[in-house]
Length: 476
Image 1 (tube, helix red, strand yellow):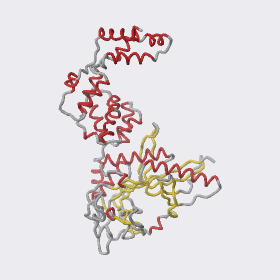
Image 2: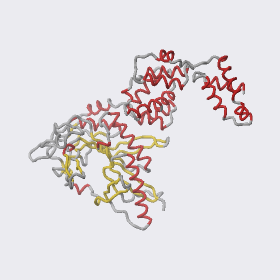
Image 3: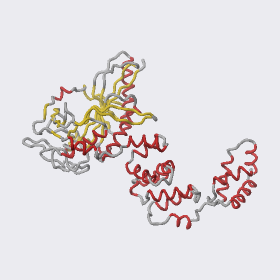
Image 4: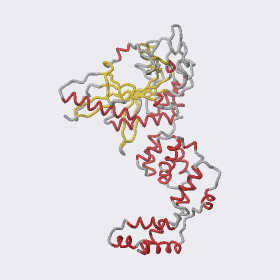
């Protein structure tokens, strides 16, 4: 039988506030074990939490970015469960009245716009972290993460392929970075997701029983977990079996999902209103003030780059999803002196290669948008070749003072467009490559590229390649 996959994602993003959600402990990663915790975030008897206002504001901004309704009056609830890294045996979260709900997210997949509903975004506290090591038996607990502020972004089950899931996750991540509310460092656990997967017969509108994979901490892992779970559930259904509602873990090393426990439902957590925190009230005027702080978001930029600048989806995405790269790209285009595609090619080509080799960011280079525009303009004006421009780029990446025209002069990079000079080179090359000329006349026109290369070599890379090709075609 043919099946259609139904996927819903629950993304947990740690917020980059200075302090934790209910106390004054520093919100930081990498500190000495159990050095950033206090009686409040450990839930000691007699302690009282105090809500961090900035956490609410960050969540509202994400709600605006995903077209959610913001609830002006909401509350927090206790979610009760016992786990070694949750010392007070309950988590302060939100149950029936989330801060944000009923939104949606538009993003591009294979050149087409996809819309996924956002069920809710709520605030909650993170739990501690279990430490497993070969140097000791069992596990130890680091409580530094207790009380770190989280938002949970819950999607509708609108995702229909692993590819759509990956694009959705990337879009959420890039929005969080644009809003500057989370560092999204998955290797540090500040962005993780729970993946819900079920299968239904193709053409049906009745969802199957879902299984949930908890705390997947890489996007590639999420895709592989979905693919594995699709195959596992299909095998069971084809054999006449029944899918049980389960919570499973993704074992990335083995590439399989493994049973953790039968899936809990809301009643298993025995939610009730948090008695130690007051009702949250956000005036509508403040909600609107926060809305005014939302910049043009990456998913919106991608669509604009494709329609206004003619960039393919892949290139538009690579530019838009990086805040500094997008800013640099748009600053290059402000004067209208160079083509968007030219800037895109340099940013995603030679410049990206340098950043990867150095392990640094665009802002770490001395290169400015103005100087890249100047470099591209010299190519457009046929003053230098693209090859020579790469040499110039190497010189200006770390030196913001040296003049580009001085580099061109000192290194003799100016492109030769003197027809008489180039004709002499073409004549010599044709004379020395009689076999290539013969092949060309036999219909092997691809040898023209070889001949252009020989002419460029003879001109020490300074000949105008376009003019060289034109002269070759005339004389061959």
